[in-house]
Image (cartoon, rainbow, N blue to C red; front, side, top):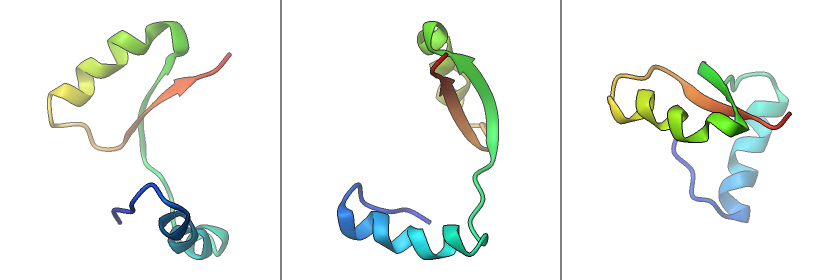
Length: 56
């Protein structure tokens, strides 16, 4: 599901998420200090899931 970064778009994904029908697939996590390195897997075009920066 692609959603615009707007209030309307955010509301559109709220109901399925609250009902437990929307799940994010996380491909990898990186510390915030590794933000530059986190771009590398995404640049390949073969990442299955989201790349997440951890705010520790």
